[in-house]
Each structure stands twice: as structure tokens, then as C-alpha cells.
Length: 259
Ligand SMILES: [Zn+2]
Image (cartoon, rainbow, N blue to C red):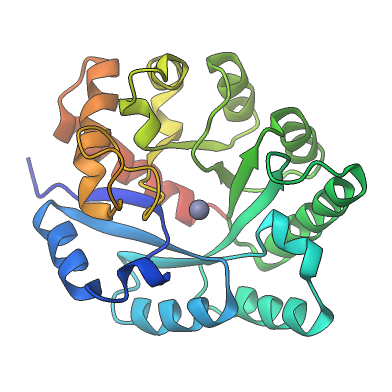
């Protein structure tokens, strides 16, 4: 077997949490074989820094930028334009995280604004031929309905739906990315998703600095923790960890290539 390249499809590496020890964090990831990193950016300035960094290694390090659903509340035209300029930049590979968050937004009028912004960004992604990273919290049915009507090439980040819902997304061609929760004792449904789904659509993520997996749950999460997650997924599938990591790597390359 060749070198394993683990994937972290969702890591906020240019947020404040890694300011102090960015290089060490990257070195720890490298040491564990976590070399495919998709850096998530929810702010324009963050994206500028991430794109400059990713330029050195575009085969392994990709950048994703999008307007986070709850940020629609304070979105002015200048900020929107700045975001769209980044999204159009060729060093920005994916559009996201975009989607719906009804956990933090209870107001129906604002939820409608989130749906509008989500659709607008999907359409931009399609125009640019870029994949999308979807955030969906307490809004699974509306997310599904939008992605069914406004088809795009995308992944469901930190997928938290049922195995049945997972199958419905995969049927439409969407990938499912899972992270720390698959290792949590109380998240049996996440493991069901992993064992049940078409393995060709499975991706791995940390959501660093959040959602650290067992056995480091509750600490600052970072990409070097990916092997814990993939090991648990492999256990669900009755596979060797490295064998699954290879499948996930192939899935990721296919995800990025499909236009
Ligand atoms: Zn995120």
C-alpha cells in the first residue's frame, strides 16, 4: 500500500484558534498523514489569507468560501460584493459553507432570507462550475427541498440526518461528510449513516476547531485528529482504516473534479 493521505474536508484553519501555533498544527497533521485539507472561510479576510497559503500546494490544500446562513442578518452590499469577488477567484475551489441554520434562527422572515441567500449562492457556484459545501442545522427537509430543486455538485457537511435521508441525498448525487460525532457514544444514527451509505459518496472532516472526536472530545479540534474519525468509520464498515482512507481520498478527488 502506498502512502495514506487522509482527508479533512472541513477545517477552519485561519480562525483565531490557530493563530498561535499554525505551523505546529500543520506539522502534526502531516505526521498523521492528514494531507488533504479543505480550509473553510466564513470571512473575506480569512479567505484572502487562506488562498495565499493554499497557492503553495494547490493539489492538497483547497479553499472554500461562502456566506454563512446566519450572517445574512447583517449582510450589507459591500460585504456581499467582497464575498462574491473571493468566490470567483480561481484559488477558491469550493463555495461554502452555505445553507440553512434554523437552530440559531427562529424568526420565519429571517429563515426565508437564509433560503434566498442559499439559492443565490448555489446558482453562483453553478455558474462558476464549483462544488458547494452545505451547512444544515435543524433544517434538513428545507435543505433537501432546495438541493432537489436547485441541483448542484456538493457535499453535506457534518451530515446529521438519518440513514434514510442520507440515501436520498446520495441519490441526487450529493456527498456526505462526517466527523467527530461518529465517535460519540450517543450518535448511533451517524454510524448507521456510515454503514448504510454508498461508500463512494463518503468524506471525512474535523470541523476544526470544533467537534473534537473521542478520545480527545472537548479539546480544541485540529486536522491531526482525522485518523480517530476514519478508524471509527472503518469499524462501521468492517474495513481496515487505511483501506477506507484510500477510498475517501479517491472520493475527494472525484468530488473536486466533477464540474
Ligand atoms: Zn464549519
